[in-house]
Length: 72
Image (cartoon, rainbow, N blue to C red; front, side):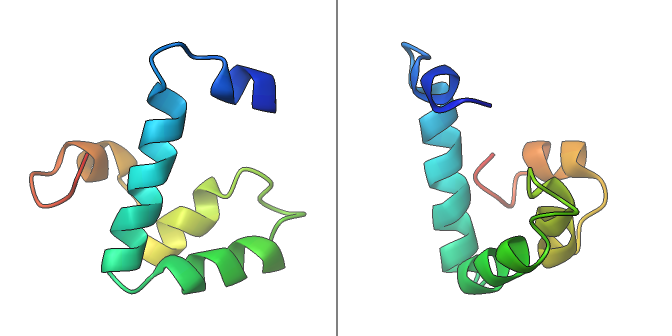
């Protein structure tokens, strides 16, 4: 996603979700691990989606998004 598309959402949804995902990872002590893994695997996983799944230990991201135990 281009930065103009990311920031162009007038509701700020993209930025808000990214910010709170980073906050969640920080609260769980996973932000540094995610960043390090993301940088290490950037060529194979440019979006970081697979890296996020691995760091969270979560394969079912729909469940992660709707689970009452997290911020989504």
